[in-house]
Image 1 (spheres, rainbow, N blue to C red):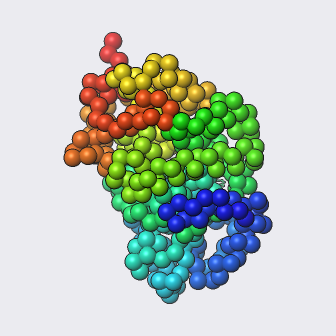
Image 2 (image 1 turned 60 degrees about the horizontal axis):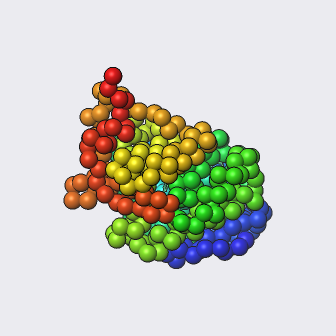
Image 3 (image 1 turned 180 degrees about the horizontal axis):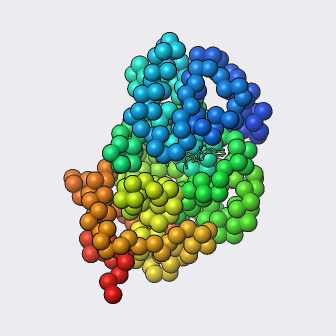
Length: 347
Ligand SMILES: NC(=O)c1ccc[n+]([C@@H]2O[C@H](COP(=O)([O-])OP(=O)(O)OC[C@H]3O[C@@H](n4cnc5c(N)ncnc54)[C@H](O)[C@@H]3O)[C@@H](O)[C@H]2O)c1
């Protein structure tokens, strides 16, 4: 087990194997509550008690499931000195950390991410949340985990759709730094990435988290307009997810949203046509849907979702746009430009 990063007090470790991981987890003792979903619960046998197993899927990031976690903690007599252990993807890590942040005004939380989204992004930076009224991550707290334990072996069983969700986050991070190393790996090592080559995975996860850390360290609570750059693509994406009642997976929506942000940046003259085209081509190269457009009849619904965005500043929805690799601007966008990039063109 190797500690390779520390961000907002969260120690991030890379494990060599499941055995290495299990050994470290053994040091936490019994004063713990394990939270898994119906898929990740199978990874630890027998699962230590007390535990909570939530139904896999985004719909479990809910008040009802939050209540279940808190109920089991109370019914098991866990005190403020207990540790919540999340074993799962972004869904389990987000809701478990949220529960830990409010249980007895805050207990310890350890995250063991099992998907690429969670390993390469969501575990860092302390954003915890649940969804509410079909709005993504609308209720939550900032509560950095005490430790994050990454073991890439668990990615072997991850379905391709979920793997690609995580890869969208990695690709997005590669655009947010002037350092070309992650971008170059992505542009040249498609086969290794798609085969989930362990060394390549460790490398892209490590760089992805380092990029994320560089933004978080300078703006931990997303108040200075620095950390917000990590939301590249998400204003477009969240509205799409909301409009489709969360039917779009988060990574697919983020990939689409980043491409829409690139189109808007190009239309506003912020970035070159070549840069925008290059980014969109890279997402398409990895099979993401970069051409989808919402039907004209759905515009009002989409617009409503944009307005509802929790990142609105003084009621104005803001977007992260890119001028170049690692150079961003956070701004509002003229409604006609938004329509032009997201909607099916009129005939
Ligand atoms: N907190 C943050 O900063 C942040 C950042 C990005 C995304 N997120 C959140 O992360 C969530 C998406 O994350 P996700 O893609 O990990 O989703 P997820 O946790 O729902 O996992 C996706 C699917 O993979 C299954 N799974 C997990 N690990 C597995 C494994 N090793 N083998 C086989 N199946 C496995 C799960 O059971 C689930 O069915 C969203 O809720 C999103 O809002 C949070």
